[in-house]
Image (cartoon, rainbow, N blue to C red; front, side, top):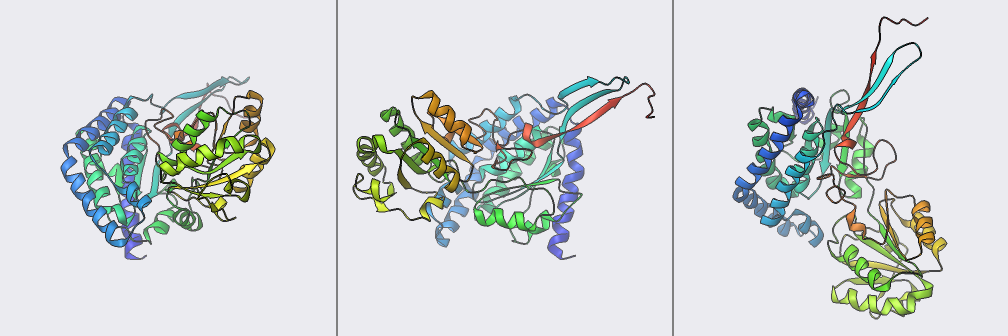
Length: 419
């Protein structure tokens, strides 16, 4: 066994053992730990922001993109949001122990299906340090232990955040080892975690296509993931065009580095001449580059020609693809061909068209007259999210505490034996 694999195995085994304390801890104790963690984050703000400044300086020296740097940056407001998210998770109903079904068989056996924690969750992520606390909070609330492996670009920030979270666990009398950040960022740690069958119960990768592919290809334990966030907004012929403009601006420009940001705008041919020139001016005011199909390019001054690859790219910046489509069927066909089954929207006043779009588009989140930026655990009322799944088994869409539970069957008898 290599030295690194041995270190990862020892850390994971310790976290697995400590996770049993979380699984058995009363709701009030887990909630107290979350609230104490939020207070520790506030108390440690100076140290956390100092650590973040080191990571930002290193990011600048390495020439990381603006999108990556934005994901990395913390300030007072973002740190407060992280602390508030901990407190919001503490206020959520506890799913652990919830009875989802209860029935009695003709032979008198009573069968109860009850929610239980998954066990030890490994979360591998890049750049965004808020994931450190969001993931830890959701795992704690749902009675799971977790091992976190962040990217090298955020190592100082992640270590500082994890120390504050550990303070919350200890304050509530829970083992700090139940939530553990790997203090090193060697690439070999990813396949090492994925190899730990019997210790790690599930892996959730959060990051770019390269990271997700690396996890999927190497893991020997179950993986829940999302592929690229190639999100669409379709402006239907019956759309309120003022509403459509505001939704497009929000979905593309409010935080373009997010996976739920808009990448391709589809516009019905019936309203393209009226809508696209105004949309072009609004996008230009937001310094957004437009890459347009030949038909729409003539309606959007300064637009570049969109390539086939553009429609399959998660730009994660102020770049927007635009394409005119012949109608609803063409819009759905484009989304299904080029999309990543993440988040897609239709803007229309026609309920029949909207219902058809919602039914036909096979994405984790489908919207009618709303921005795709709402695909987020906090916005869904989950307090935070451990990730967004575009898979179809176990979890889909934003993953909150309920998605971090499984179930077991309790069977109560009076001496029955099977004949």
